[in-house]
Length: 353
Image (cartoon, rainbow, N blue to C red; front, side, top):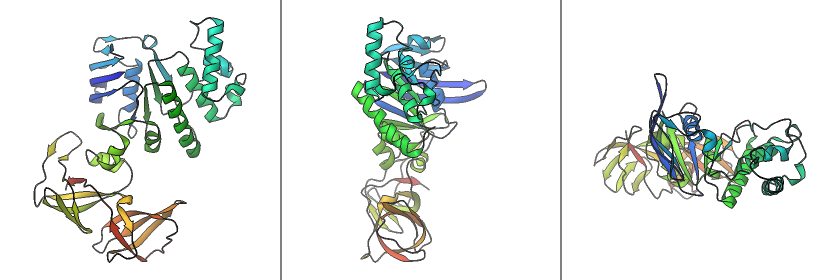
């Protein structure tokens, strides 16, 4: 439904995107995730037709919509847009906002489609209200209904929940995903919030310095990051020094880990094999460290953060390295206390030191 093929884009002498390629299948929800300035919004604007690529091609439902020297007008791409600031018309009611893109329909069909959309987003009772009379979450639902009403081939969402508080953001992102799946809408989301990305997207592209570092499922991004940037950006964790013993083993302070030693890749796509004796850094996630009072291996509680159902402990190992551990909140240990731990790793993520 959407394909970007070797897209490059610059603003004057400043390159913004480098060789960006990814695709979305019909009904799939994708996400471009990354820090500010990584190029994700520029990529979205190129798909929408607000910018023109310097190199590469963009296709929507197989139709060529952009390449150097050609760009199909935004209004002809059948793309829906949901913006960060909602961009609702203040002088129109909720129903009026949803009906805005339906001028091509007759009055009866338009009214039916508006009712259908308001039912879908749960705002039937607010049809005659004005945007200023709604909460932020309700305004975002109106923006979504307005974008979906003309039946777009593709929906683009630009930081759609960033103006909402954390609890509402998580709740609404799940609701929007359900709506998009119900309508079988292909969508591309842009965000810097990985929780939002994980809640909504089937596939995520982590961006850095204008390049897609990894285009993969949320699970694989967390457990099988392609390079050090993705490992550091996604989730939490630390990199412990280690030494490769053979193609299946690497030794760190906590013991010998068994598993395939991956090819080490950098952010520019260069890869090199790590052989025996290679000095590496091994990614250890908080859920890789299991609290176990019976373990002979102990670590000192250096910091702790209470998160309701769990504590996030920062633990100092005997050799001076530090790891994070996610521990059930019933285990409330004091700072300076030594607790038993063991490894619960079923795969190895290692990068050349």
